Length: 85
Ligand SMILES: [Zn+2]
Image 1: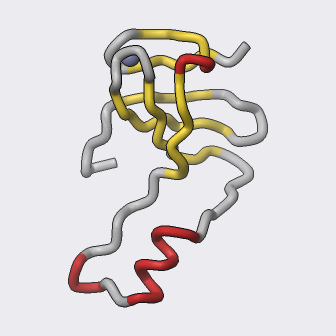
Image 2: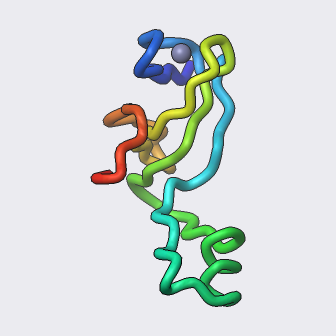
């Protein structure tokens, strides 16, 4: 059973969470053109290793970022999002 730690509620069964996709940096407004925006919205890195991801904890309604190894499912860190990463 995979456990995730919600920064608000603590460790819980992954069945209480929804995956929100890779956490990638949004392009700066001055750098945006159609191709850059399309890449940001639709291209995925499909990392084989540690990746930052968005997760949603349904019972408390919190979005947060987790660092999860995509092959081993090890979660090294969860935290509320911050611009510093
Ligand atoms: Zn929670």
